Length: 234
Picture (cartoon, rainbow, N blue to C red):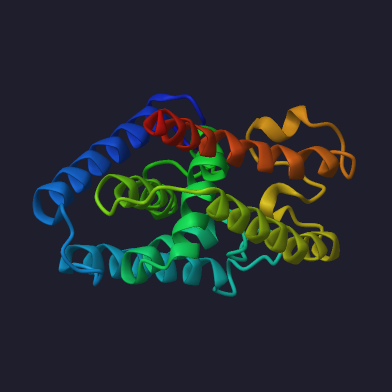
């Protein structure tokens, strides 16, 4: 296969590998670090964080080389690009606001990049592996932060994630309009493969839908925790 296509065996294998790695990381973390006795990151967590940063720098540095650079597509401005760095920061610092952003962006928004990935490179390309590594790391860290480090989102965290999301759009939308790009999927163009963006109508009208839809998606991943808290109080 010369190009990657969603919902093929390659897609399924990539998601399966990520699921296995997440299960192994969580199992190891729970066996070694639960209950946590200190807020400082473990050696395991530091190793994961720095490995991700190294892959992130190598992958995005590769795209910034003159032969490949294209301001419209290769700048590391997609939300998942940023969330991947936030994931490393969460492992290293356990900063509450970063944990909140990671949780809501990972489960409500970055999951779309894994369901309908915007890549064409096949498994023979390093781009394929770096894409799945970085996106998988986001999901692994978000799940690890819940299962091992005990993160539980609150309404204050939801508010922080909404503010961060609005700030992100405020930054990337002018860049999209200036370059004709589609960072954050709020630009005029559409992803390489069919995605939920295709159902939201033409640009710029779809901006009126995308922003509240993102807030609703984050609300959806907030509600199970709120319901659990209400049930526990009863």
